[in-house]
Length: 234
Image (cartoon, rainbow, N blue to C red; front, side, top):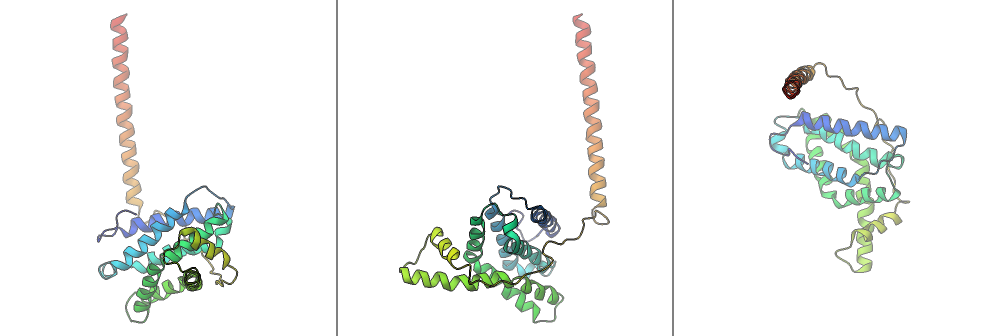
């Protein structure tokens, strides 16, 4: 939720998203359910997508925002496809769908951006096509539930429903929802510090060694002073 500025730190975000992806893959594989408010993560991911779309013109001149968008959407797809193996409660699924429906405009804009680049001849054409393919289930969820919600609102003569009311509509309409199974959502490349991050880790280790030496030197001086104090007392 931070560093969302025109000078976008792409590498930092890719590393962070990679960490999140690996944690979710581990949870899926080992069926671990941690007590965490996943809504905070979904909000952060959707906010990131909205930022990328809003600053598309400026960012695409400097970087491939489609690649990071694909990674973000695939994390959401992990929740949609395999969430039953690691989400803490069945109600978490309802909350996920609620957030996707509530923030549908963001996903509509991402799809529109992808469509615009995929029909051109620019360098991001293939990435844009892949991005729109990853959105297929999210768009299916939005298209399935939005009319159901509007129909229910009309029947109840409501304009501003509560979250609980929307969640109830979602729960009652799962059975008629059709999604496509997406492969390889839990696959990722093994991390290697070479060649990009070797210099960073070398510098970090040197700093740790230097700080440790200083700590040892200060501790040695303090010990000498303590011994001197004892000597003077005796």
